[in-house]
Amino acid sequence: TITDSATGRFLVTNTTAMASINYTITGNAWNGSNDEFGRMISAALARTTTIAKLAGTDSTNRTLQDYQDVDVIIHGDLA
Image (cartoon, rainbow, N blue to C red; front, side, top):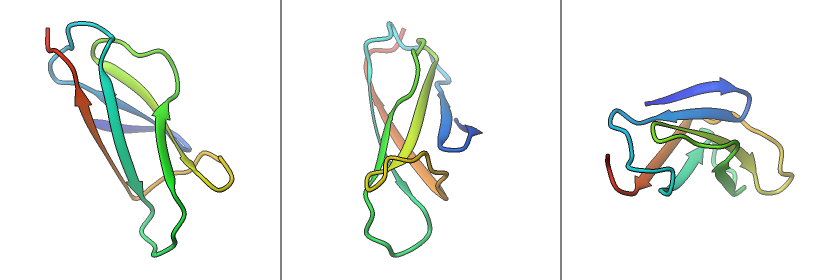
């Protein structure tokens, strides 16, 4: 699940724990408009085997942004 935790910050909670914290997350975001600004999804704080804390920023000014749609893919070994 993805939970909004603050402006531009969100938590991704895995239903099944990963084997370690050595996994990769890729993501994208959309704000509901046709602008051409790039959006970046990046790790915000230390992760656990079940929760990743991420941030979404606008690539033009690097400010934290909330988005209408956030999608992530997690690659790694399950516990």
